[in-house]
Length: 70
Image (cartoon, rainbow, N blue to C red; front, side, top):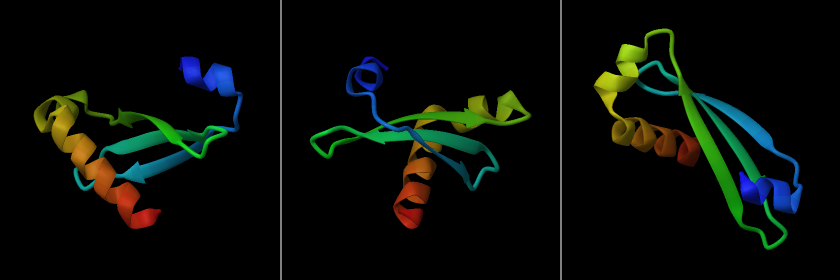
């Protein structure tokens, strides 16, 4: 978050539906050197799904989706 305030760049938001039916919002921005930063947050109507899946599995699925669509 500190980097966002320092570089003052436009933030892009992308929503991805993961295979486990969780929606992940990914907030991305590029700095002046061409580095891409992101922050992600999963959303679901059933928080138990996130606990059951585990953060590692959710992040792995999220990275696959980003690689497929970008």
